[in-house]
Every structure is written in C-alpha cells, then in structure tokens.
Length: 82
Image (cartoon, rainbow, N blue to C red; front, top):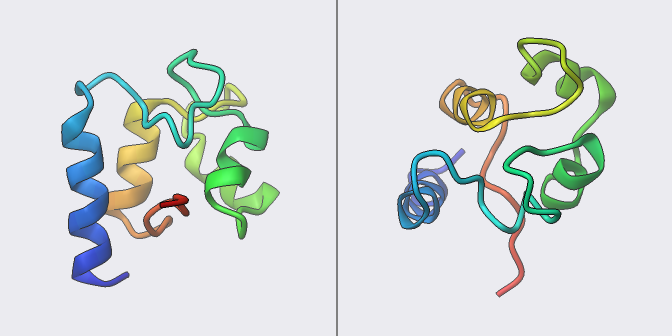
C-alpha cells in the first residue's frame, strides 16, 4: 500500500473519534462492520480474509480489528467515492 493511501486513510480515521468506524464502512451506524458492509468498502474482500481479520471470531469487524488489519497491511485503504 502506498504511503499516500495510508496517510489518506489515517486522516479519515482521525476525523472521527477513536471509537467510531468510518461511515463509508459502517453503513448501518452500529460501530462495527459485517461482511456485507466491509465488502462494499473493500470489493476484494474474501471470506478467508474476513475470518483472518475477525480476531475474536464474532462475525463482525470492530474498530480495533480494522485498525490491526490496516496496520499489518491485510487491508489497503477503503474504496471511497469522491
């Protein structure tokens, strides 16, 4: 992932509180991302990658799991319409 993409993504997360997932990902506003939600932001998301990112195996991606995935490059920045 490029440094520009990382910087843009981090700026997006800084704009929200530390516990608020980006609106582009959390479309239902529950603070978590289901497979369906995250697939919209990350079209290349696979079932296997989702399971890998879902560290506590609860079937959803929370803020902490998403940040870990981004830091470890399991995910690139989300696809966001501008």
